[in-house]
Amino acid sequence: MKEKYFIPAKGIKAAQPNFQFSKQIRVGKTSSLLTLVFIMLFTATAWSQVEITLVNRSEKSIYTPVHLHELKIQNNSGQTQQYVLQAETTNCGKKAYSDLDFRILNQQQTETNTFSVPAGASVTFYVETKESVRTKKNTWNCLEIKALSSSGANPLTSFVLKSFIPDSSKTE
Image (cartoon, rainbow, N blue to C red):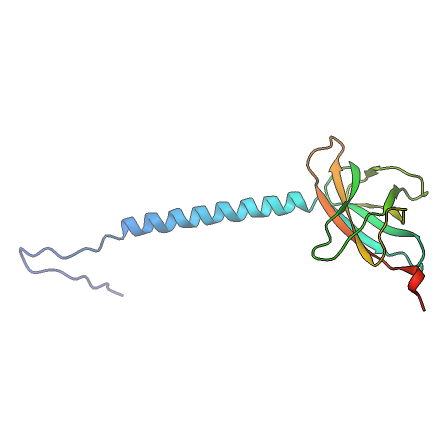
């Protein structure tokens, strides 16, 4: 197939659109967008190297002052990792909240906060929550459990365990 070209009359220059500038802008936007996507993927991968999930919430009556919750820490990286778990009461949003005493326990239910997790595996741990004399009734407790690297750097992930603390004296 023969291509047809526009040939201007003698002495008249054909107007040539200048697409070069718009191509440079388009290429610049594309490379910036690709860079942003790679950064986001890298960040998502870094954040997903470790996860904390709830396995079983305490099955005791909510009026029981001590509860044992089963959780697991999952190591999604390619090598064994040491994690330090920290827990602290955090704000429960607009709900009234109160403190509970808590302990982090290993599978043998011995108090610890350091866990060695093999590559691609998970380790079960427990969080024991217990009412104290300073615990207010008919409030919530939000306990944030954070996983840190063994160096104690910034939290790698966190999980919030929410518990309602009823007033057992007002049961019917």
